[in-house]
Length: 195
Image 1: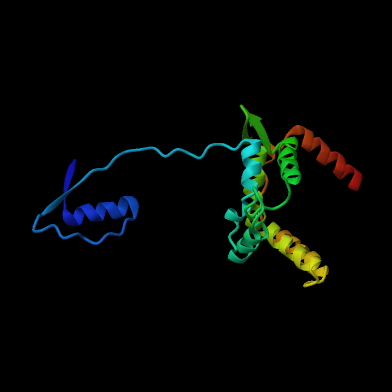
Image 2: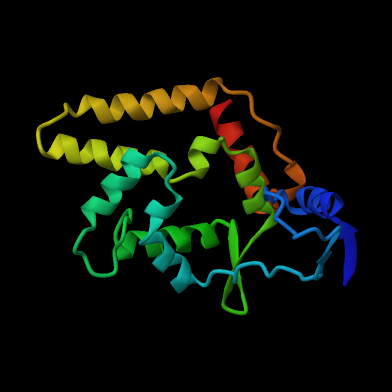
């Protein structure tokens, strides 16, 4: 246990943890005892295919736009096992399988682990493509189209606007050292066909 004069104790607490406390009434005492424990935090458990699929049924918790989040939650109201999801059980499983098949994820001891290629893709992707908000927004437009509240062009225009925005943006260069040889060969043969 360490003793600090009252003002110093709270000054240090602010520096360490950004705690905002009012100085307590100490009844005339000049110091207060403070105990600092050293602990390590534990990262969240890695996903398995099943746990990632289950988390995708609650995708709304990752959506930043409050209106889109509310829409996703409302769409799944009363549906067992769905709480603000996108897609179906089959499409969610297919997405995970494709990420593994294309080398963005690998399974190690039943746990999903991102590969260097997957981490590089994530690093260079624009933020709007990293979050589920855009997909949720497009789902909402599709629902409006189904109900006759929006023309079909609203969806295509929205996708086109996003693509234009992505193409206009300057992104970091890709670290080519993480691209597997099989993809480098595929890229060069495609470039030869185009040229």
